[in-house]
Image (cartoon, rainbow, N blue to C red; front, top):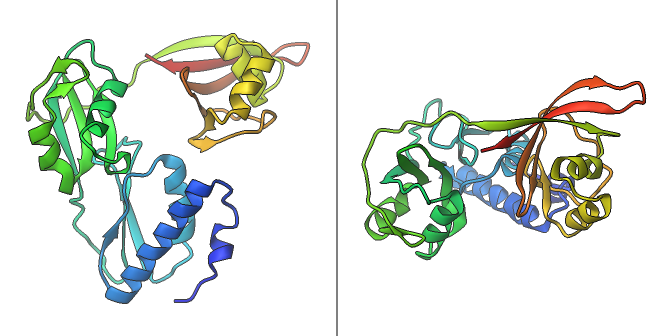
Length: 256
Protein backbone atom coordinates (compact mmCIF):
# COMPACT_ATOMS: atom_id res chain seq x y z
CA UNK A 1 0.00 0.00 0.00
CA UNK A 2 1.38 3.43 -0.89
CA UNK A 3 1.18 6.36 1.45
CA UNK A 4 2.24 9.96 1.77
CA UNK A 5 4.71 10.22 4.64
CA UNK A 6 4.40 13.99 4.97
CA UNK A 7 0.62 13.81 5.32
CA UNK A 8 0.82 11.18 8.02
CA UNK A 9 3.26 13.12 10.21
CA UNK A 10 2.19 16.69 9.40
CA UNK A 11 0.43 17.09 12.77
CA UNK A 12 3.57 16.22 14.76
CA UNK A 13 5.86 19.06 15.87
CA UNK A 14 8.25 17.25 18.23
CA UNK A 15 11.34 15.97 16.38
CA UNK A 16 11.60 12.93 18.66
CA UNK A 17 8.00 12.01 17.94
CA UNK A 18 8.61 12.37 14.19
CA UNK A 19 11.35 9.76 14.58
CA UNK A 20 8.84 7.55 16.38
CA UNK A 21 6.34 8.01 13.54
CA UNK A 22 8.95 6.99 10.99
CA UNK A 23 9.72 3.86 13.01
CA UNK A 24 6.03 2.95 13.06
CA UNK A 25 5.91 3.37 9.29
CA UNK A 26 9.00 1.19 8.91
CA UNK A 27 7.30 -1.56 10.90
CA UNK A 28 4.19 -1.25 8.76
CA UNK A 29 6.34 -1.73 5.65
CA UNK A 30 7.89 -4.87 7.16
CA UNK A 31 4.47 -6.31 8.05
CA UNK A 32 3.14 -5.58 4.56
CA UNK A 33 6.17 -7.09 2.85
CA UNK A 34 6.86 -10.13 5.03
CA UNK A 35 3.40 -10.80 6.52
CA UNK A 36 4.91 -10.92 10.00
CA UNK A 37 4.00 -9.61 13.43
CA UNK A 38 6.05 -6.62 14.58
CA UNK A 39 6.13 -4.93 17.99
CA UNK A 40 7.14 -1.46 19.10
CA UNK A 41 9.13 -0.59 22.18
CA UNK A 42 7.20 0.75 25.18
CA UNK A 43 5.37 3.99 24.38
CA UNK A 44 3.81 6.57 26.66
CA UNK A 45 0.12 7.45 26.14
CA UNK A 46 0.89 10.38 23.82
CA UNK A 47 3.18 8.21 21.71
CA UNK A 48 0.48 5.54 21.58
CA UNK A 49 -1.94 8.16 20.24
CA UNK A 50 0.55 9.15 17.54
CA UNK A 51 1.07 5.51 16.56
CA UNK A 52 -2.66 4.82 16.42
CA UNK A 53 -3.26 7.86 14.22
CA UNK A 54 -0.83 6.38 11.70
CA UNK A 55 -1.93 2.76 12.00
CA UNK A 56 -5.58 3.70 11.50
CA UNK A 57 -4.67 4.93 8.01
CA UNK A 58 -3.92 1.39 6.80
CA UNK A 59 -6.86 -0.90 6.04
CA UNK A 60 -4.61 -3.94 5.62
CA UNK A 61 -2.97 -3.49 9.04
CA UNK A 62 -4.34 -4.40 12.47
CA UNK A 63 -2.86 -3.68 15.87
CA UNK A 64 -3.26 -4.36 19.57
CA UNK A 65 -1.91 -2.44 22.54
CA UNK A 66 -0.60 -4.11 25.70
CA UNK A 67 1.34 -3.03 28.76
CA UNK A 68 1.24 -6.21 30.81
CA UNK A 69 -1.80 -5.30 32.90
CA UNK A 70 -5.10 -3.52 32.36
CA UNK A 71 -4.22 -0.08 33.75
CA UNK A 72 -0.70 0.06 32.29
CA UNK A 73 0.60 3.49 31.33
CA UNK A 74 3.51 2.52 29.10
CA UNK A 75 2.53 0.02 26.41
CA UNK A 76 3.81 -1.75 23.34
CA UNK A 77 1.87 -2.14 20.10
CA UNK A 78 1.60 -5.37 18.14
CA UNK A 79 1.34 -4.63 14.41
CA UNK A 80 0.19 -7.42 12.09
CA UNK A 81 -1.69 -8.18 8.85
CA UNK A 82 -5.43 -7.60 9.14
CA UNK A 83 -6.22 -11.14 8.00
CA UNK A 84 -4.84 -12.47 11.30
CA UNK A 85 -7.78 -12.59 13.69
CA UNK A 86 -5.86 -13.68 16.76
CA UNK A 87 -2.24 -13.26 17.80
CA UNK A 88 -0.26 -14.33 20.83
CA UNK A 89 0.61 -11.35 23.00
CA UNK A 90 3.71 -12.56 24.80
CA UNK A 91 6.22 -9.72 24.43
CA UNK A 92 5.65 -8.13 27.84
CA UNK A 93 6.82 -9.84 31.03
CA UNK A 94 7.19 -8.63 34.58
CA UNK A 95 9.80 -9.19 37.24
CA UNK A 96 9.06 -8.90 40.95
CA UNK A 97 11.54 -7.87 43.63
CA UNK A 98 11.49 -7.56 47.38
CA UNK A 99 11.01 -3.98 48.47
CA UNK A 100 12.97 -1.70 50.75
CA UNK A 101 10.87 1.13 52.21
CA UNK A 102 13.43 3.72 51.09
CA UNK A 103 13.31 2.75 47.43
CA UNK A 104 11.50 5.10 45.04
CA UNK A 105 10.48 4.81 41.39
CA UNK A 106 13.46 6.88 40.21
CA UNK A 107 15.82 4.58 42.13
CA UNK A 108 14.47 1.50 40.35
CA UNK A 109 14.63 3.10 36.92
CA UNK A 110 18.10 4.50 37.55
CA UNK A 111 19.43 1.10 38.59
CA UNK A 112 17.95 -0.57 35.51
CA UNK A 113 19.40 2.04 33.18
CA UNK A 114 22.70 1.62 35.03
CA UNK A 115 22.83 -1.91 33.64
CA UNK A 116 23.04 -0.41 30.15
CA UNK A 117 19.39 -1.03 29.34
CA UNK A 118 17.51 1.49 27.20
CA UNK A 119 14.45 3.18 28.67
CA UNK A 120 12.32 2.21 25.69
CA UNK A 121 12.34 -1.51 26.54
CA UNK A 122 11.19 -0.92 30.12
CA UNK A 123 7.49 -0.43 30.79
CA UNK A 124 5.74 0.50 34.02
CA UNK A 125 7.49 0.25 37.36
CA UNK A 126 5.05 -0.40 40.19
CA UNK A 127 5.98 -0.19 43.86
CA UNK A 128 3.47 -1.88 46.15
CA UNK A 129 3.52 -2.27 49.91
CA UNK A 130 5.76 -5.33 49.77
CA UNK A 131 7.12 -5.71 46.24
CA UNK A 132 8.46 -3.93 43.19
CA UNK A 133 7.10 -4.95 39.78
CA UNK A 134 9.06 -4.14 36.63
CA UNK A 135 7.52 -4.65 33.18
CA UNK A 136 9.97 -5.30 30.35
CA UNK A 137 10.17 -6.72 26.86
CA UNK A 138 10.78 -10.42 27.12
CA UNK A 139 14.21 -10.47 25.45
CA UNK A 140 15.70 -8.49 28.35
CA UNK A 141 13.87 -10.38 31.14
CA UNK A 142 16.62 -12.86 32.00
CA UNK A 143 19.37 -10.24 31.85
CA UNK A 144 17.64 -8.06 34.44
CA UNK A 145 16.66 -11.04 36.58
CA UNK A 146 20.27 -12.19 36.96
CA UNK A 147 21.97 -8.79 37.10
CA UNK A 148 19.71 -6.49 39.11
CA UNK A 149 20.78 -7.24 42.68
CA UNK A 150 20.93 -3.70 44.03
CA UNK A 151 18.57 -0.73 43.71
CA UNK A 152 20.20 2.55 44.62
CA UNK A 153 22.40 1.61 47.60
CA UNK A 154 20.09 -1.15 48.82
CA UNK A 155 20.47 -4.85 48.16
CA UNK A 156 17.43 -6.50 46.61
CA UNK A 157 16.41 -9.95 45.46
CA UNK A 158 14.11 -11.47 42.86
CA UNK A 159 10.83 -12.45 44.52
CA UNK A 160 8.87 -14.39 41.87
CA UNK A 161 5.45 -13.45 43.28
CA UNK A 162 2.05 -13.15 41.63
CA UNK A 163 1.22 -9.74 40.18
CA UNK A 164 -0.83 -7.61 42.57
CA UNK A 165 -1.16 -4.01 41.39
CA UNK A 166 -1.95 -1.61 44.24
CA UNK A 167 -4.70 0.96 43.94
CA UNK A 168 -3.43 4.45 43.20
CA UNK A 169 -3.61 6.82 46.15
CA UNK A 170 -3.83 10.61 45.85
CA UNK A 171 -3.71 13.72 47.97
CA UNK A 172 -6.70 15.86 46.99
CA UNK A 173 -6.78 19.65 47.14
CA UNK A 174 -9.13 22.44 46.18
CA UNK A 175 -7.73 25.59 44.60
CA UNK A 176 -9.15 28.77 43.10
CA UNK A 177 -7.87 29.90 39.70
CA UNK A 178 -8.75 32.96 37.68
CA UNK A 179 -8.69 30.96 34.43
CA UNK A 180 -7.97 27.47 33.13
CA UNK A 181 -4.78 28.54 31.36
CA UNK A 182 -1.80 26.27 31.94
CA UNK A 183 0.33 28.96 33.59
CA UNK A 184 -2.49 30.06 35.89
CA UNK A 185 -3.25 26.48 36.88
CA UNK A 186 0.37 25.67 37.68
CA UNK A 187 0.93 28.91 39.57
CA UNK A 188 -1.89 28.05 41.97
CA UNK A 189 -1.13 24.33 42.11
CA UNK A 190 2.59 24.71 42.80
CA UNK A 191 2.37 27.99 44.74
CA UNK A 192 4.76 29.68 42.33
CA UNK A 193 4.67 33.08 40.65
CA UNK A 194 3.37 33.26 37.08
CA UNK A 195 6.79 34.41 35.89
CA UNK A 196 8.50 31.39 37.48
CA UNK A 197 5.90 29.06 35.98
CA UNK A 198 6.36 30.62 32.55
CA UNK A 199 10.11 30.00 32.75
CA UNK A 200 9.50 26.35 33.61
CA UNK A 201 7.10 25.94 30.68
CA UNK A 202 9.37 27.73 28.20
CA UNK A 203 12.30 25.57 29.35
CA UNK A 204 10.43 22.49 28.14
CA UNK A 205 9.80 21.04 31.59
CA UNK A 206 6.02 20.65 31.33
CA UNK A 207 3.92 17.98 29.65
CA UNK A 208 0.15 17.91 29.29
CA UNK A 209 -1.20 14.40 28.81
CA UNK A 210 2.39 13.33 28.10
CA UNK A 211 2.80 15.85 25.29
CA UNK A 212 5.55 18.42 25.72
CA UNK A 213 3.88 21.81 26.01
CA UNK A 214 5.66 25.16 25.62
CA UNK A 215 2.59 27.38 25.28
CA UNK A 216 1.65 29.06 28.55
CA UNK A 217 -1.84 30.04 27.40
CA UNK A 218 -3.34 26.68 26.43
CA UNK A 219 -6.64 25.92 28.12
CA UNK A 220 -6.76 22.84 30.32
CA UNK A 221 -9.71 20.50 30.60
CA UNK A 222 -11.01 18.27 33.35
CA UNK A 223 -9.06 14.99 33.69
CA UNK A 224 -5.93 16.45 32.09
CA UNK A 225 -2.64 15.19 33.51
CA UNK A 226 0.07 17.80 33.93
CA UNK A 227 3.65 16.68 34.58
CA UNK A 228 6.28 19.15 35.75
CA UNK A 229 9.94 18.21 35.96
CA UNK A 230 11.15 18.11 39.59
CA UNK A 231 7.61 18.76 40.85
CA UNK A 232 5.83 15.61 39.71
CA UNK A 233 2.32 15.07 38.43
CA UNK A 234 -0.91 16.96 38.98
CA UNK A 235 -4.32 15.70 37.84
CA UNK A 236 -6.93 18.34 37.04
CA UNK A 237 -9.80 16.43 38.55
CA UNK A 238 -12.87 18.60 38.05
CA UNK A 239 -14.41 22.07 38.16
CA UNK A 240 -16.43 22.30 41.37
CA UNK A 241 -17.99 25.73 40.90
CA UNK A 242 -17.45 29.27 39.63
CA UNK A 243 -17.41 32.38 41.75
CA UNK A 244 -19.33 35.60 41.17
CA UNK A 245 -16.11 37.13 39.85
CA UNK A 246 -15.71 34.40 37.24
CA UNK A 247 -13.01 32.41 39.01
CA UNK A 248 -13.00 28.62 39.19
CA UNK A 249 -12.97 26.41 42.26
CA UNK A 250 -11.33 23.23 41.05
CA UNK A 251 -10.13 19.99 42.61
CA UNK A 252 -6.70 18.56 41.85
CA UNK A 253 -5.15 15.22 42.71
CA UNK A 254 -1.47 14.66 43.42
CA UNK A 255 -0.15 11.08 43.58
CA UNK A 256 1.24 10.09 46.98
